[in-house]
Image (cartoon, rainbow, N blue to C red; front, side, top):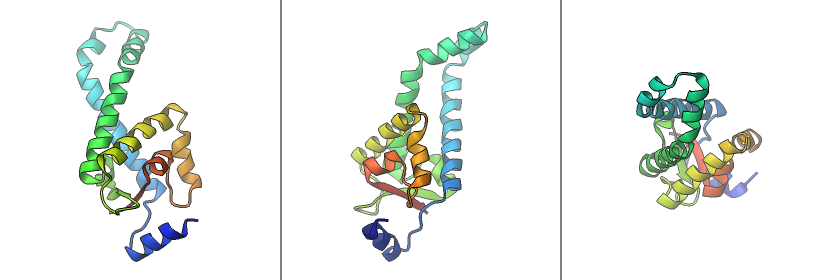
Length: 149
């Protein structure tokens, strides 16, 4: 356990967000971003004549999808300390050092490592279940923690 982090959380009366709340926020964000991509690609998807064609189409736009996810995560985390999913679940991201919304660089770092965690079979997310503060890889690299709002 991190005694310094324990002291900060105790002093500021902050509690770590539950794994259930973080998982629900993750699901909400993924549904929102996937729906956005579906809307953008709808004309192309409608013209596809097989499931294989749809898969090829979505694979063709994977970099754009990752870029959208990084921009979404960075903007909302930096601006509001929470994505729309986190806002709904009443949790937020704070920088451990400042106890405020992450800076641009911290939010960007967090968004990029979130994508890396997804690409590596979600091991970065699984890590959060082993960490006493429920920090995933993207929290560790960005020096952030997710707390109840």
